[in-house]
Image (cartoon, rainbow, N blue to C red; front, side, top):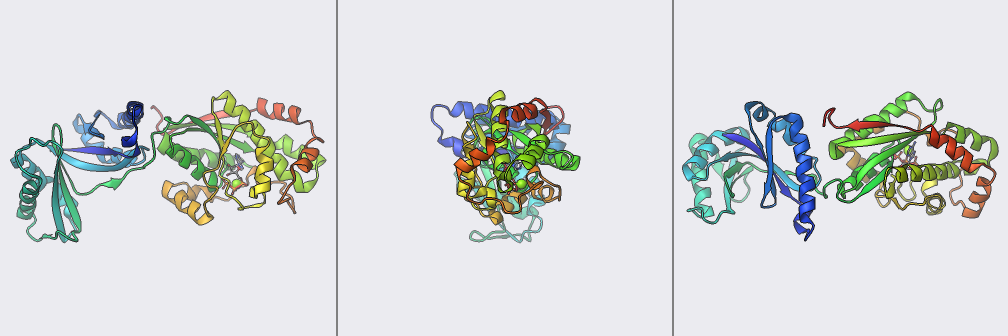
Length: 396
Ligand code: ATP
Ligand code: MG
């Protein structure tokens, strides 16, 4: 008996003529992950990707691989299953061998069968009844409950083999990373921006990141925290290039020469311009931020308009309509929350004005900005940029 992984397509089932390119990305992504764990066959048929261990070592790692396949965008459901020959005796023997572990702790079960191979000589209810009987033979204390079973056992009779499993997990949903183009995430160490990046990856964008630091006002720990966050995000996207730009000189110049209530908005305009330069250099077509309407002074409608005016690229703000609670829920579910709440300074929180403008008028912002040599400050910051490549696995 061999345990395999079945990954069932989500939304890409609905794709028309270009479905094949979505499938190719999906397959490549599963293959990349499988290669890290061992020798696997990864193929697709009938809107399902089949992942099958090819040697004993791979058989041992299949459950670890399963955990990461849950994070591949494009699948609606994933499950671990036992594969066997399409013959009722083999199906019953495999069920009796494979399922007791899965049914441990359950008081009741129901067996279901589905045939996508209609040439199989028994009907689905007949297969279900046989398999149910085989399970009861080895687990006589179990009760059959057709209405409210603790566990539903499924037999799927497909093209080459029969597959037996005891329930599936939700897949990551969305569409495969990289099928939607490239975006640049403004990644702070906070709660919102990693969630924003995750949400756009889920919609098929390949996401690189830019992080602004303000050393020595922000610490190396703050930068490491951002790298840790991006490492967590690579669980979904495979790799992420994190560009790092220092805003120290810009912030010191702003403090010395501009009206205090405008500090934050002016700084954010620098962030937008610099991000656009990084994006263009790396062929990203959109910026992504974790802004949420009304969350803080710099995220009022007027403030966002004044910020956006400095960007020559569109800005996606997937958290815009979410409450903090909703963002936190996602942050917890993707595993970034505990890192995000580590208490390090962000460049936006050094030199914060005591009374920031909550409704900055663009003309006044531009007038303040004219006091500065924007181009020279920007060039100097851009020239000192560096990047770190963060990968899910060291090798692939
Ligand atoms: P977050 O939780 O993502 O830090 P926030 O609620 O703290 O967001 P702000 O600090 O106003 O909000 O930042 C709004 C957005 O600007 C962030 O979501 C992020 O996209 C971007 N941003 C803020 N600080 C930085 C930074 N140091 N580097 C890169 N992007 C940043
Ligand atoms: Mg922040």
